[in-house]
Image (cartoon, rainbow, N blue to C red):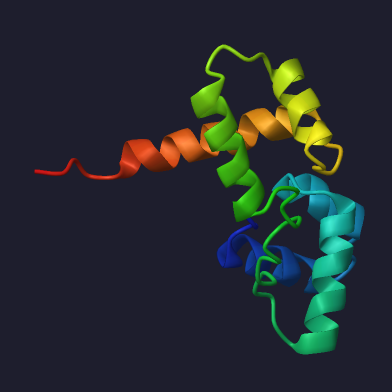
Length: 121
């Protein structure tokens, strides 16, 4: 999800400075949540800036590069394995318990990486 633009943030903050302005009315006027308005004003008071905070990078990966390499190698040897069978094999070899969706996403990501590589001539 992308942060709101600096232009919108500036207009919301300016609207809050108008005499008699209420946060709920400003939020409704600009189509944002009341908590966004409250947080924006708190950020402006604390830092003097309305700019969005930098992205945090998201959640840590469940499967590291070694785990993905094992999955790819296993699927290379057992191409007809279902996700349930792959999950059983993964946990049997000592992998941490993960959902089938996690395994699918790791394999799909690997597939997309291979697709992006330019062909060798």
